[in-house]
Amino acid sequence: MKILVTGGGSEEPIDNVRAVCNFSTGRTSAFLSDLFCEKGNEVTEIVSEKGVKPVKANFITYKTFSQLADILQKECESKKYDAVVHAAAVSDYSPYCIVVDGKEYPVGSFSKVPAGTELTIKMKKNPKLVESIKKWSGTKTSVIAFKLTSNADEDERKTAVNKIFSSNEDKSFVPDFVVSNDLSEITNEKHPCVIYSNIMEAVARVDTLSELGNKLLELV
Image 1 (cartoon, rainbow, N blue to C red):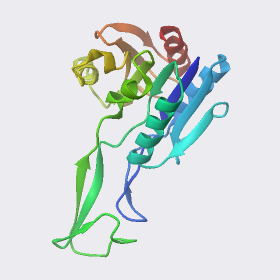
Image 2: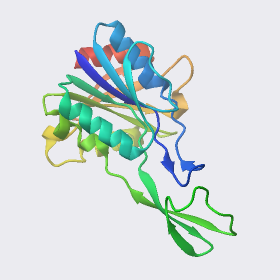
Image 3: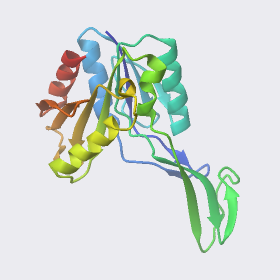
Image 4: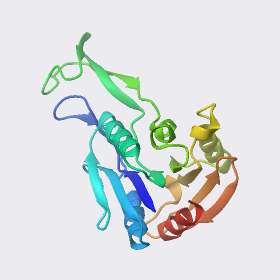
């Protein structure tokens, strides 16, 4: 199969030295990319500049949400992928304006935001990339999304997963599967996950990334 993977976390710059970011390392996506390669698949990963890189898979780097969106769209539209595993931690918001001591400046106005007594950052909501993947790649492409929660109970995790499946009224454009995992349960040895189908059926429960990768290959 031909598989596209996204991984790592995006950074949204405030100026040339500061950014809004998350703590994603890209370890999961790099592991899955290499495991897919070991199983004989052709794999490309779109990974953040600071994320863990795959050893066996080809990779393209990105930094910001807009860069990730552009690369993902180009890859999906120009190449025939059998599956897209969207594991990147994508920024929900991007800064567009900074307010220093009550005066507004567009992001990018300064190489470094000047010192002041008060700083406010205004942010705009980014679109959900997972909602566009099948529009770019075609509905025959299998799409797997990830939903990471933190200290959530089972009902909260299922609600978060269902929100992804309910994001588009046209069900042909929603992901085929969502991998639910919670930060509180992840260790160096264990990575418990539940894989849900788009009818909210728990089709698999796994304890490690190896088990997850093999099960995803089986499902797609």
